[in-house]
Length: 176
Image (cartoon, rainbow, N blue to C red; front, side, top):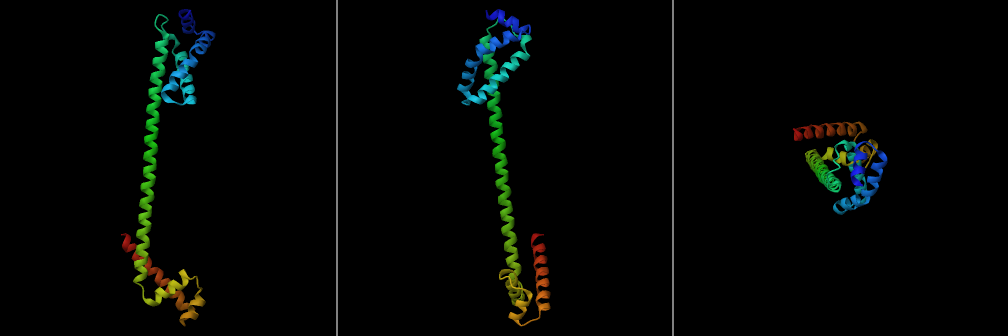
């Protein structure tokens, strides 16, 4: 019976192919699932195997053991699948490793920049440091700073402009 069925499939008989598919589908899925332990993926792989058999039906030899032929194709497809899974895991690991490295590098650059800013601020005169502190840390306006330090609003503004210039210059020097 199988020999006639295989001859009919080789000649393009879709009904015969469906009969063969129905006969082998469940054992093939069980075999595949025993290796990869994923029923949905096993069903997908077996579907691919049967499509491949249909596409290459002209090469089927009805004299040979079809069972061995089918399970050899399944085994090879499962091994290819496992290689793909392993390769995908490697790519994911490498991706996450790169992200972590990038985050660490960014964090180190940020720390270095903060350290350089602190050093630049420490190099300022006491008056400029105090104006900067009142403006940035305490959120005081130019008028409030001028009133607290008994200086003009323009002096506060000019001192902040000069302070920012000094800090920028020192940061450029530090990063060069």
